[in-house]
Image 1 (cartoon, one colour):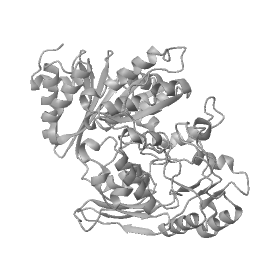
Image 2 (cartoon, helix red, strand yellow):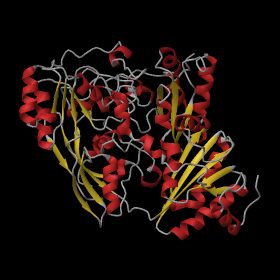
Image 3 (cartoon, one colour):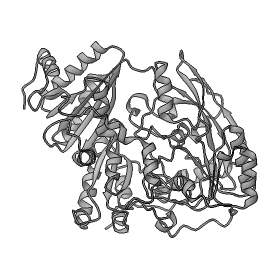
Image 4 (cartoon, rainbow, N blue to C red):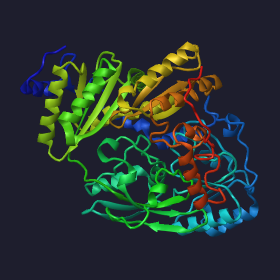
Length: 564
């Protein structure tokens, strides 16, 4: 391990072309090709992949085959021609209605019936694409009056099956509601349609010197309304916090067609109940978000990204502690990736790794500030310290925007890289930081003990990555195909594990259908009773998002006893 370096020596390392191993260095052009890895994490391409039934292994079973205990609710009306005729008349534009009732529209409907993970698939016969809040209102009122079940859908980039139908629910997709309504470059307040793609919003803000306070690997297709409905966390949470704080106001349509107009542009407003908070993270169960007013920070002029290899999780924790202490106000991201996650990215892309050698853990840190010289000095001091104390074993520092994107690709590309080799069981968990990676180790040990992992087994491994700064780990089990034995080994065992650690079974991905029946591991009977009362108040007919979220009836007690 290199001895502690002086600041002048570190500057020399940053300008070198290929320093020796175990130094923090700039990215060599021979180390990573210039092509940005962000390109393969674009969710719009995921949608294309999911739609291609001709590719081997891409066939998706119906959700009802995965969950045979689910039965269609007999209260809901089956779609009829008169319903489709009303929708066509109301939305006027022929392209606004995909009609699979009066003609065969299977190919057109398929991208809206299935999720990009190739796990969930419904049987809707109609997709509606309203272009205004008034059209959403008319459509929802009609559905409510006629007991037609509804699934709101944005970019369909979710991970828990919430955005696709289970049976024949009417899909209301907000793609055509894609306008920027207003932006105040003094206050940084953006008012925007719910169907605006997140990346488009961020690109608009970039032109005005601001930044969208949320960043996701799925930014290329995820929509703002869906972000808010899921209360997505993402890569900027450490710096900018939750949407519960950044969203100032909402426009939403209730199941009976009532338009809730609360597009406040005020940061302070204590006038009565803050009703918008019920829609943030409500997953579309009490209404459809059609407009959002959101506080957007000033875009940082100086951005640095470093990528490290570390020899233990204990050293990962030390590195995070030092980053908070020494980088303070400029620290904008601290991401954790294990060796398995980086191995999948390497196998998928065939790109040369950012650093030589193999390490059990890798971290990506980002700093964002207004003064490049000041930020560089703080970063150099931090790097000197973590290298001198032998906390970090090796690393690289990006020297320009292209290299920043390349390094972020090793984090953002994990999900799609695993998907290239088959399917993936995904668990989005919040755990106290000291135990953050323990769930990965214990899951790996459990599956190995049941002989489910191996070259000739269904599971390819157990992967852990996530947001160290938020205490949020993404536990992933990549498999050749979805398999009942693997699922039975993981569930409900993993939720019992989380319950014992007083963590959360859903940190940022929501409940959808995947976790609906396990909500009782997280919420007690009193809280569940209150949630059901809210649902009943806003949606007495239960047409919104049936079979999901609270429909799992996870009210039964869970003792947390281990499952053998």
